[in-house]
Image (cartoon, rainbow, N blue to C red):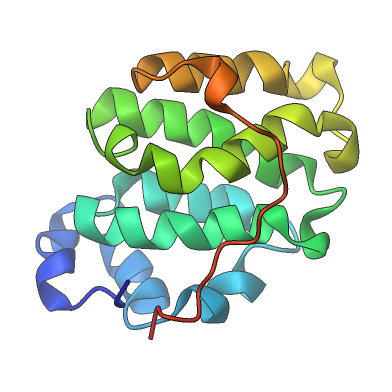
Length: 160
């Protein structure tokens, strides 16, 4: 998978925070984006991904998934919660944007849905991750039983 070029960013000037998102994400590999999720910044990254042009989104959402599957995300309740919620919102706002790449995201979605304690995410504040994962699967036309919950690192070696 190649880093998205200028055509993948068409129209970014018209989206909320589009210039900032373009300046931060454009031309970066999945690995290069990893440090931009920690330290409570995942909610902002989720907002940027929510409004990003579809081709760029479908590449860069894999960086968020990669972060959540890494050891660096342990205890990052905001990252895990925002990931599932923004994917639901993105698919509802732009049908097909998530469902077309669900297979690439299913390991991360399943892992987050099955690992709520790992992220120190209480149900009272963050809701039920398993229910959110199942809702996302259904919205994407998938069987929630497809979510494995296995921690399979995404291969980013070919993203440059």
